[in-house]
Image (cartoon, rainbow, N blue to C red; front, side, top):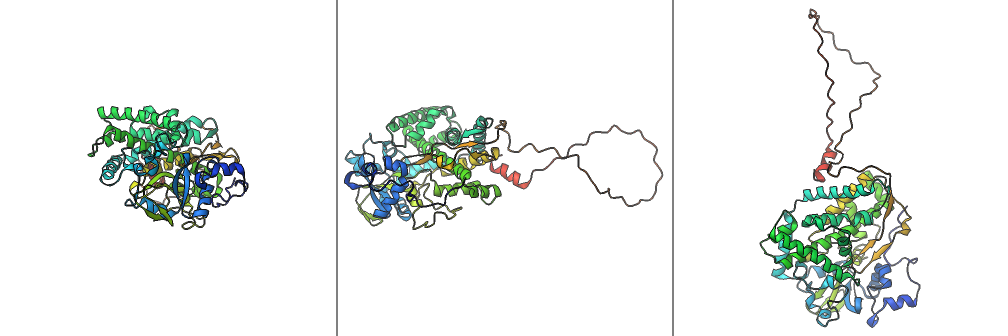
Length: 496
């Protein structure tokens, strides 16, 4: 199965609604004639809505969030970078948003779990931001990254053991959605809280659904209990390291930052793994480059961060003062949407979407500026190691359906595959603690030699020695086969 040539989102005539369709017009246009970034049309093709906004207004466009709350959608790549890198003009403190002040974006808003102010680094500025952000980066600096990769590999193989004997699997529900939560709860020191309920709550709380607030409460209750436990009995995990930082965070601050790290790393990585695997399974050129060594798994991950982003947008940034951005007059208190997906396909910086972006990290996948994602290295490690482990265990994996049958579930913040059904040859489970490829095959003994053995040069004759009874022969020890440099490098990279 092949992947069609990339085209700019929203330009596919086969998926575009018919002109003048009342159903699409009534759901896609809201108060003041502005386009909605939610509802049926946006859920079906949010990228297409962004392209319509770009065509109508340019790199910064007026739009509507849930409950028809007005926001500026920042669509241009350079405009997004300017916004996130200019804290003198734009802040993440949602208490300065006029929609929060007048109550139109209150605590009952579907996106409230995302934008409601909390005592954590992503919502504060200046000295307070340095204190909280410094605590997070300090705690992360103390993590054993090689040890984390070792656990990623073990968790990956544990999940693969659950499916390897069946020959069929859904790599979204049985792998991509499970692995990041297993790893992140291990990093936080709360593996006992891993459950399907935690996985679903983490996904639901950022979708803007009716149950998002309840899902947020479930996650926060689990994190708060964990903080209390670690305050009383610290261990070697990220939570204990965060509590021990010189910034002396309160329990509420620690729990809020655990939520930030958990949800950001989980949702981004789950989508990232699913997207990379889809590209491998649907694009033979992509798979051939991986198999042939022209592309590494980390390079494949970076390409995916351009084409199929884990997060498509983020709410939001807020203007501190009257200013201009992308030719629009922005007033103090206005809200702005960080347009990650539309920024990545901005024709100004990426006129050819089919161009290879390997090695180029100027994408917006992890934002930028003072609030750039602090957990991106862990997310990359989970995706790199998880995808590599799966392709090594299941090298014959193939898509079980036609590519056109794959479905997506979208929200204003993210877009992810519903299922990725695959087939592969059945194989027995492996020891999840064993080193990869640690059993070297026994050297072959039945070689056939056609040429005669070389004869030694004649030596001077000597008296024949007295006959001695032959000693019992011992079986020759099999020669030890040394691992090649490439195998040693792979084992070092995976933490062994």
